[in-house]
View: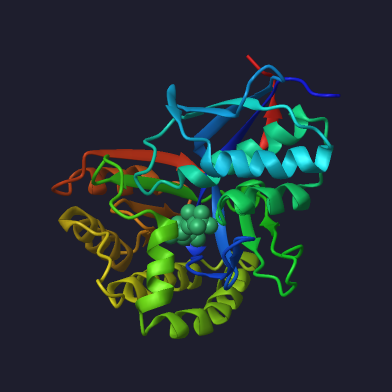
Length: 327
Ligand code: DP6
């Protein structure tokens, strides 16, 4: 038996080309690829303590006991690989509101994959960690890496090639990110249920999946050539097209509130006036504004003034998931 307490941190990420829909539910394989940026300031810290005396896994999120659910499922995969059976106590803390469309599952499962694999003595490659994190949440596969990251849909039935890789380190294009919080409660319909509902009922879903490849090509080349305007147009198109697919579901999913829309228009007005900024919106009401270096202060001031905006967070691009000393 070889196990010990281990801890890890991982940053949240926001997709510029969105992941919305799966090709396999059991292995959690995405229907298409996606491209994201990993954030510096929004992170999860997770400590995994294997304890053979425990009868079952225990999971605490921000100090509150939760059913182990998908956390237990990822632990099972890691235990199986390590040939171990000990149940674990998992303590996870986010430094941002959980469940409000700020991708807490992405940083959470990336931190869990790193901490739990170290706790059971496994030395896994980033690619293997990405595959494990994906089993918890598709977007988590991307948070293993820092900076600009691409997730591959893969073609293998096993899912072995459905992993992320880094496109560009954060320091090579240090974009800034402003998050406008328009609602700090938990979202009504989580990403997983929302995407499955869209797949089942939206006539726009096939068109969404068919057009992701073009957006990936455009975003990849915009990132390689640091073409902000091309990235802005591609990312806004991907976000709006994803929301169009949800709006066309039955019943339609409407994640936006009036403040979401006010921020979207404010960002577009700023860009028309020459500020390097674009918006993206996930399965929730918050607006994330991605800006050229040096522009975040002006963008944060404007978004903070929009009616219904409760709070504004400013951050930059950050590193991938990593083990940290257990406290
Ligand atoms: C809108 O990764 O939460 O944030 O794989 O079912 O856990 P599951 O879904 P999840 O979905 C994220 C959806 C999104 C877009 C994105 O991050 O690419």
